[in-house]
Image (cartoon, rainbow, N blue to C red; front, top):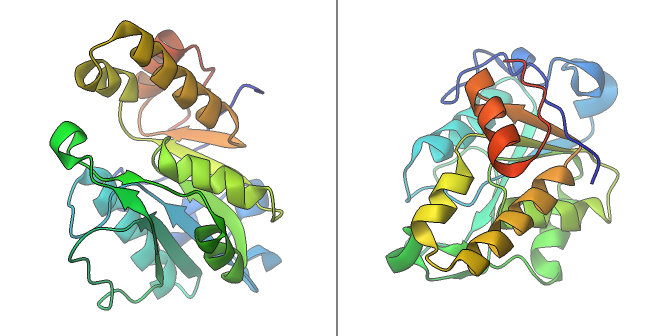
Length: 212
């Protein structure tokens, strides 16, 4: 795919300083017509009741946008016992497989039209994925039907996590190829530090122009 590049994020991994800083460049600029009649769809493979740093970032993104009058929607795999009623923004759940014993997370299964149609109904003008697996795959499926760019934020050194979780070298290579293909399909890639960007250039061969 075309080499991806990053743009300034203007926020920490945990919480954006303000909604105006989230997408403050080019066609993402807050205040333009871009978001007046549509929404931002945030996608991540983890979400409450599962708690981690990236999940926290996604919740805070959605809260900040909602409080600033920007429509935000979160798409995430289903999780037993999840209760999304307390959130002030819509949460779209799609099918998942129980892989918690092996990976600590449920594996999202985004295939089928239900999740895609639910996201389309929110009129997404921007798809912002925070995980290169199920979330980015779903974003790519949605992008085939709507005219919305995909931004991917690289929070974690996933190549290291793959090496830890997958024992067979062949399967490691297959997983990393899937990772690279998904990330390379995104319109832009953001990183949380220049070190993260440089590490992924070396480990995965993806060009990321890290400006944080």
